[in-house]
Image 1 (cartoon, rainbow, N blue to C red):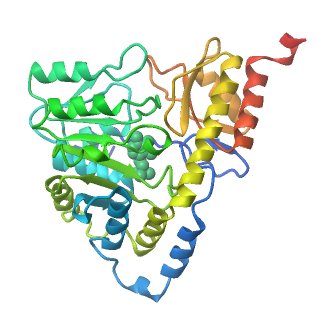
Image 2 (image 1 turned 30 degrees about the vertical axis):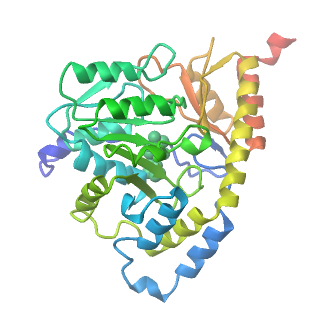
Image 3 (image 1 turned 120 degrees about the vertical axis):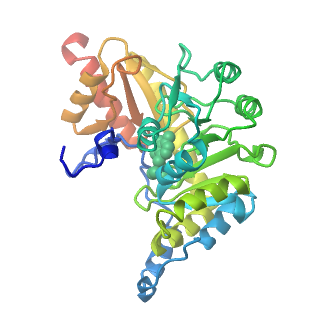
Length: 364
Ligand SMILES: *Cc1c(COP(=O)(O)O)cnc(C)c1O
């Protein structure tokens, strides 16, 4: 608190990211990063870009990256927006597309940055409760739409932190039900098992798909995210960006991003490894007494039938393993969100959990 703060800053509730520990040797399964390093082609491209050219500003339009993304998705470069991580892309979407005089709808259990942006940009919101099984009910949204004005809709698919996917036909029902407002589908985790909405862009000019290179392309440290949609939606984001920062992506990020989008072989190999580890992790958690929600992501959301989430997270930390526990009351309090690591990391986690939930004295 300070007398120098603006009214806006007094009213903010900032997002709290997962811990980035300074201690070496921890098994880090708390922020959904990729356990494998990025494509070597990415590192090579960044090394080459680390040249005297750094004295020059980067391309404000990051055209080379837009071209690579458009080619990957079979779209036009004009249907692509790029930003400094998808969080920045999302922020611009909140201001440029979702801020209207009617409330923005999103799930009550969802990416915890959404309410933060809503607060920052002063948007009215309406939280839409997930069903008892933690799935999203499109009917609830359609009903909310028939009962009054809606300013926009945003949801992650797969949802975070549940990991549960919404079927493509359900997303399309939502898009068709709200032709007059922007619907943002945050596909941060889509490459691990959900159906992408990208093919619906040509039929639904209200659809904005948001993606990131942080998860399935192992580049959380490079900060590259993008959005795909009708040119009118992209123009809104560009207008916000050009009123904020002309160069959100530096030369290294553009070069690395292009190489990442072009290395399909690395991408396919890595996501296959992670989905295989995930399936093994789920199979290992269940016999330890965990209920695991069906995950289409690179993390699982699990609760133990006896041990509270906070206790498990603390005991794992003592064993040098970090997982995420959300300190909020309500339905998700018992859960741990566990990032899928390498097979070795997942095995270490399962051994540590077995030790915590089935102490040797009980087994004897
Ligand atoms: C990780 C994540 C993002 C942010 O990704 P960045 O590109 O690293 O900013 C956005 N949405 C969801 C749901 C995420 O989990």
